[in-house]
Length: 426
Ligand code: PMP
Image (cartoon, rainbow, N blue to C red; front, top):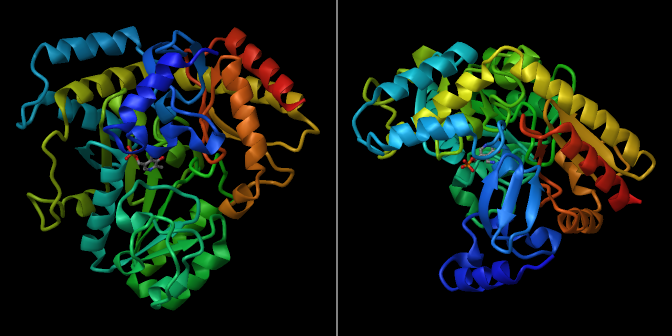
């Protein structure tokens, strides 16, 4: 695989951009590679600056459920651009997209658009603190909610942090800045029970990825989400579902529809922006109405509700709501997952999946928590990634990420992938 142009693009980028990348995982360091520079993308094929063609299973981290460069989305975007790219004054598209979000995710009674998942979560947490008048945020190890200080609290920072313990944080942010966040083991009902017993009256919110995808795909154990709903309600804390990945991925109504659990606040991103920097948070009207200008919780954004991004989102959601979209995608995905499972049997690999997202963990034990995910063989994952890359497949470049199937993956491409996975692990 010739990478001459990517290599020189990387050298040039290093002169101006820290690490040469605008998001660390793109450095490909954890899989022993260097960044690949992409020239264009269409459907499921990425073409890099050396003309290598890669079949994409990362899809801009789950954004492109329809595949890259979808003609109908492009049409809507070009029409929007021709009317100007930002006004800083309301446009009709904002209400139209909010209306669609509310129709598909009814718990999002009011919706506010922002520019990234990080911003959506930051704003939802501020709102939860404003609404409850409490400080403490409970999150789960291995769940990622963006890079705001208080959300980067590392695994294992349980009550000791709250009580003034000096646990180190992997984020590089001093603990004193983030001491109002507690991170608990995902799927541990007893850990949640304990923290509510000790400081329940101080907890503003519990935030969770209902189907975590940032430690690789991990599923909630039976009753876990229901328990979070019940315990938060009982203590007057809010429940926030971070559906930045699962929203519009698992179903039109996201993970909350799939599991039948309704949070107070939800964050969405990725798919809702149709490939543009848009995300949103929303939830119960009585909570959302505390936001400025109606209420005291300040939140704002120069490019929030950008008309080009809103148009891309509207067109994307219109396509997603066409009859049978999710049943076709999810049944294609489950046939593929079944096939993949058979081809990795006996190779010490665990395949976790939900809907059209999956992770292959290089481990012989069930992966139901960050602790379990961390015990995977990362060397083997690196080898696996590099093998697939040489064969023309781009999977998410970390053991702790999800892969995605889109409506644009053909059965032939999926078969080719399964065959190459089999070669890679043999
Ligand atoms: N929440 C979740 C669940 C995510 O997966 C991500 C990003 N992958 C974020 C929040 C942050 O989103 P962004 O990268 O758009 O800031």
